Image (cartoon, rainbow, N blue to C red; front, side, top):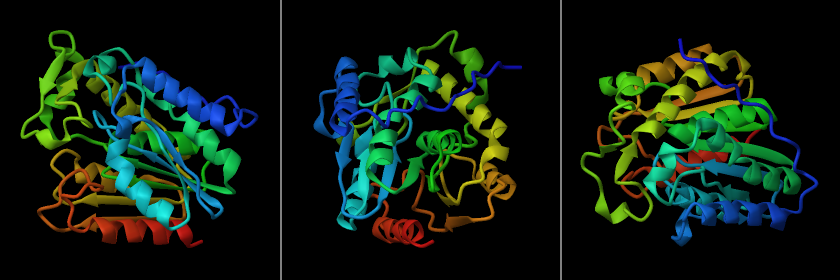
Length: 278
């Protein structure tokens, strides 16, 4: 049985100036070697009362959520594009940091929005969805949206990660899109995969705490996430206000926010409507 380190609510940073919080987040990115503009955290102030924290997936960067960020910002929302620690820089960083580090790295964006908005929504994709759930249940949020949540991984080899991590440092990705090499790692760091393995277990352990309005979106043909696990999670969460959308198109796989999803803008519209209503 694996011993899971519990996550704790953030220390209250609402007394810290907005500019200082963003500066601290940017400095952390710089200290890890982030150099590409789109891989830095970013705050887009809006003109309505709702703030949205966007959390990307494993081996990705804020770029993954940038199109959704621009869509929501154009609708008047304040948006914070978070960068999870270890991402958007060098893959070796993910073989050093833990899921606790990932969780802690989202506190800057969380409190920027908490300070400046009346309501706060957390949206995460894949691994970012797991972090979004934990941020929301431990610190409070008005709603949470999870895209392709990594609640179970299809690849049988993922179950062997606790063993593989003792012998291997990286796993090369199949069919990697080289046009995205500035924003995604070409490899999956194995120690990072082990931290994801632990985060999945922790999120299931905390399932009874999910009493926040929750909207789940995933493709029935997701090539990474086990849709059956996601549906089970949906059935088990306690919140009275929950919704799940299953995308039926075979061409739609795991990442839902980039241009290879022809229904992206329709999806963004559904997310915005759900955030705005209620």
